Length: 390
Ligand SMILES: *[C@@H]1O[C@H](CO)[C@@H](O)[C@H](O)[C@H]1NC(C)=O
Ligand SMILES: *[C@@H]1O[C@H](CO)[C@@H](O)[C@H](O)[C@H]1NC(C)=O
Image (cartoon, rainbow, N blue to C red; front, top):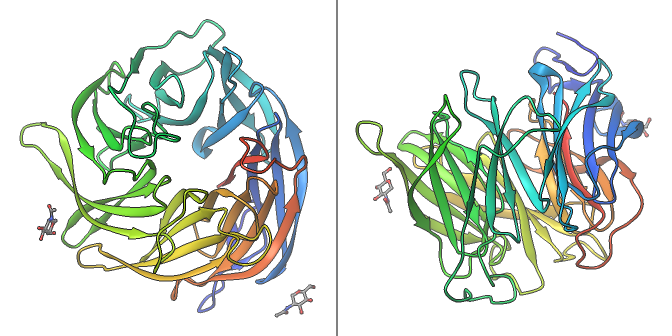
């Protein structure tokens, strides 16, 4: 099978990539279309083929709905107003602004949920106002929130510099698509909501505590032989946590029980200047990105690789591998499992590394592109997100 954005699967061989498209956002405003062309399995080039604006002043995150040729972009603007933008992608993944809704800004994440198609609403997480907000799709200039929930804390958490108040940082659908889990970096817990699919309304379930000082940021579900598991990327502690997932009887709540926590550095704990960022699962491997360990040299941070036990989902640390960037904030494995796109936040680059699906190992570097301007040390600037358009 072959398509301009897809892959040719050679029988009996590792898949041979021909070309692929990616979408990347930059904190300074632009949203890019990138073309990856491969000369062979381990060597290629990345080119900018499109650039648009329309995601406000500080695009922080993107989500793709390929079925409707849509890219959604979330604005972290801290100037008191922002946007929630939808772009239409053409056959070459070139983006045109399609619709946008006004927000109060400071969104660090967004995801689709609800409705008959599980993508009739969008939820955004606002870091400093400590809120989540939901909207009905399609978006328009007169879109109003369906719901807005906000939280406070009586006192700061164990890392007062990061945990001064609640900081919701993501929103992840469970496999039944009837619950959303919202990691709260400030409050050291994962918030859980039951979805009313018809109205998009969220009802709070009991929260799941993380370890004190974990600072959960992102997460992903995985079905194992022993049942469903949820993996949490903990930014403040630079660790990953594995939770058992259970469902209450008769439409009751989803519950998370923490089973295992491992450092994203293997044999040592993270320091206060290191901040894990993203977590992705592919096959029997889990990957987590480390910002600011410079394990592989100046401005060369690491990704951690964990092997997942097929039976019960437990994690074993394998090794650190080069992310080819400084502050790898976003990264994603392609659908074929053969390449990983890594966004270096501060270096403002996108690196493509090869992935061995059998061993889970990453490398070598296949292609790289710099998308200036670079970010500043520790700043919320530079490259914010990158996803495969597939
Ligand atoms: C892949 O292509 C690059 C660039 O054309 C070349 O330098 C390299 O030798 C090739 N590698 C293999 C394994 O064919
Ligand atoms: C998690 O589930 C496993 C069975 O898959 C069970 O043995 C274990 O006790 C559970 N742990 C917690 C903390 O719920």
